Image (cartoon, rainbow, N blue to C red; front, side, top):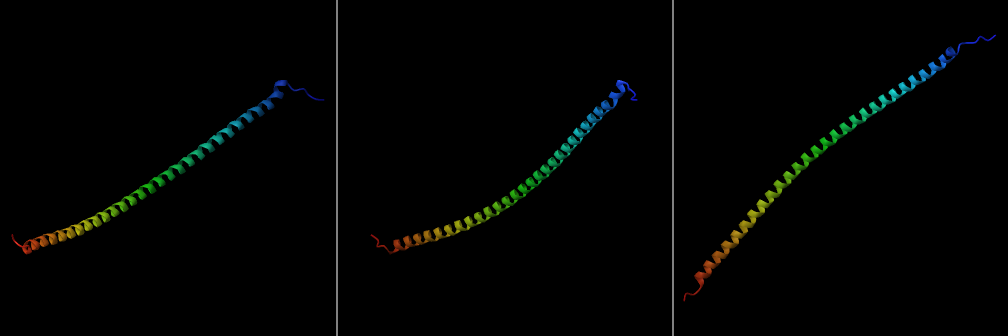
Length: 112
């Protein structure tokens, strides 16, 4: 003989299964959200570290470029200074020769 169970008691295990399934879904969603948050934090940290490294490398490269430009400018200024001194000396020498030639020419020319 089969004993008849009350209707509410027969529904209880099915209702519990639905509640358990809902809890499982909620827990899975929380786990996924935590995993996404952790992945985002890791990606942020990696991006931040990469950005800091890139900024440091750029800064160091800029300092090196500035130093190289400064050295090149000093060398160019020195070369210009030397070239100017040589040109001045040559002009001075040529001018002195012209003046001396003019003096000698004036001495040698017949007086009228």
